[in-house]
Length: 105
Image 1 (tube, one colour):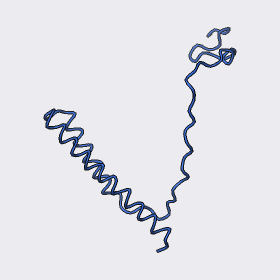
Image 2 (cartoon, one colour):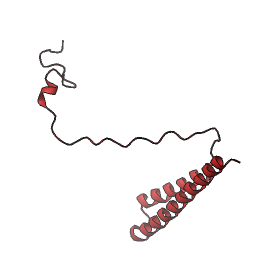
Image 3 (cartoon, one colour):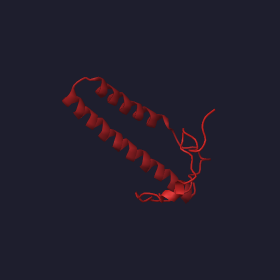
Image 4 (cartoon, one colour):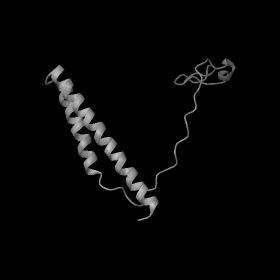
């Protein structure tokens, strides 16, 4: 096995181990909640969801050797929370209302 493939396998094992640890922590936290809240519908759903996540992880099996990870996504661009220039909307139609100078038939 080449060093690159072996590195990918090790990375996958580390990722799965990290998810297993996270699920164990989630399982323990839900157990603590169930002690506080009792047997409620919400608690039963949480217990079921954690069990389903564990089952899904167990069913993953080895990754498809033909799969190649995609490129790392670029960082999100932050859009400032300021008012847009009103002139930008001069000829725009209002969604659901149409243009202000036209009327529905």
